Image 1: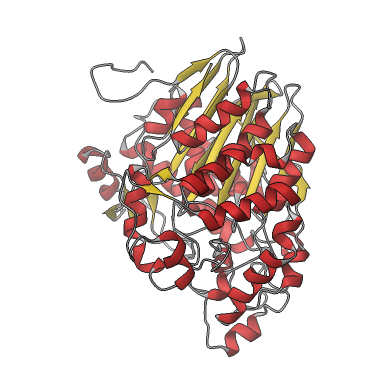
Image 2: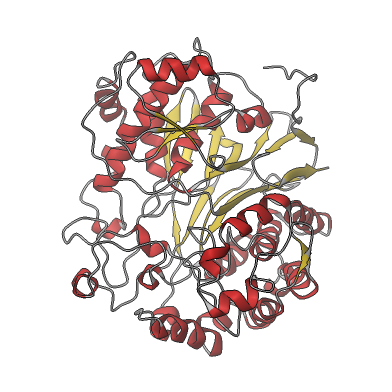
Amino acid sequence: MHRNFQLPGRSPVHARTAVAATSHPLATSAALDVLRSGGNAADAAVAALAVQCVVEPHMTGIGGDCFAIVAEPDGTVRGLNGSGRAPAQATPERLSEAGLREIADDSIHAVTVPGAIKAWETLLASHGSWSMARVLAQSIDYAENGFPVAPRVGSDWARLVGLLQRDEGAIRHYLVDGEAPAVGSLHRLPALAETLRAIADQGASAFYEGPIAAEIAATVRAKGGFLSEEDLAGIDVVAVDPVASDYRGVTMLELPPNGHGVTALILLNILENFDLNGLDPDGPERFHLEMEAARLAYSIRDLHVADPDAMTVSLKDLVSKEFAARLAARIDPAARIEGLPTDILTPDSDTVYLSVVDGEGMAVSLINSLYCGFGVGVATPKSGILLQNRGACFRLQPGHPNCIGPRKRPLHTIIPAMALKADKPWLSFGVMGGAYQPCGHAHVLGNIVDYGMDVQQAIDAPRIFFDGIDGPLLVEAAIGEATRVGLRERGHRLNDVAAPLGGSQAIMIGDDGVRVAGSDPRKDGCALGW
């Protein structure tokens, strides 16, 4: 598809050597600095991510989790699961005795062990060439000397200020006179700078053992949580093989559970049963099929996807073409399916995703999150660490695969993606947005494969999701009236979405080696290369 240059928009970035795409310009700049100084894609990705943990504190942080897919130029692909576990004392019985029927987003029981720092260290050890100290230098500088608050960051910060105002540590580090810092103002995080400096000097052990770990555990336990120093010291990061599925000649890769990447593969497998190429990419026919396929895929996710040690179905069965064909047969192109299971996680977009491809052709697809905006809304008083609320993804129903349990990993929403052509890295991409992410992966990939969009067009295109599998569709403002009418005629209820659905970055590697990158205008970021 050719861009109409008379309409607002941006072109994809074409680069010969190396390129980075992130949701914040300071992070993209940090990645390029590393690449130009001789670092590789893994070094640049961690450096950029560390900067984002400072300059986008509502979206991500060192108190969160991390996942990565790394593709070598020869097509060798490895995954990394850096998600933390529930405390050893966390059981559904104890939480039920405390009067809980579910774990709320702002409950202290939603805090799980942060896996990010251990994941960064593991990624650098397996694929990087720089030390942790060198990689973290720019993030330490921004935390210590300040960073200008970007427009989307400032808007979200102000929207979430009420959560921060409930915690003394959050007030101390993340508010100015009790309010969110203004857009364009310089904000400093000196305590976080000291924490990052300790990690730079001592590695991940500085975070998971000693004074920092003691403060994290004490902060949680003072509010009634179960997290202990032993839980933090027991952190483990797992190297995993991605799960693969073909979509119209492209090999799509997602990480296995406890992440919900297999949901994207199920969704794509369902859509492969329909001829989408002849449909308007923004029309009601395409969006109806996509939403119905997504509702089916997410209903399967909610029944089965969890910590792999607790799952009772095989990944092979979940991503089989035969299974998808049976699901696709349930879809009526003219009417919405009724009676699907209704559970679903919320489509929060408080995550950062980035992609980097270096001069040797290594591609890194990396994602890091606190789950909801500013996580649980609690920051450690001395070290300035915001704590994630990933435990809100657990259930409290004994017997369910995703029921909380001691040292169990929850169903996880953050998922990096990678696609191969002819067994070589072709598209390193991801879509932020909580539960929306599998749908976002399918939407962006479909825009490219089915409609011939370039990566920037595929990212820019309007999006629709749903507020619960049996709930109304959430519609972005760019969706036209004819599409809205067509969806209503098929039985869908529509609500205008309050905030944009997610945010995406993507880098495509052409047959001639040219890198083509895009970054989502729904965020503050950009793609750059040379």
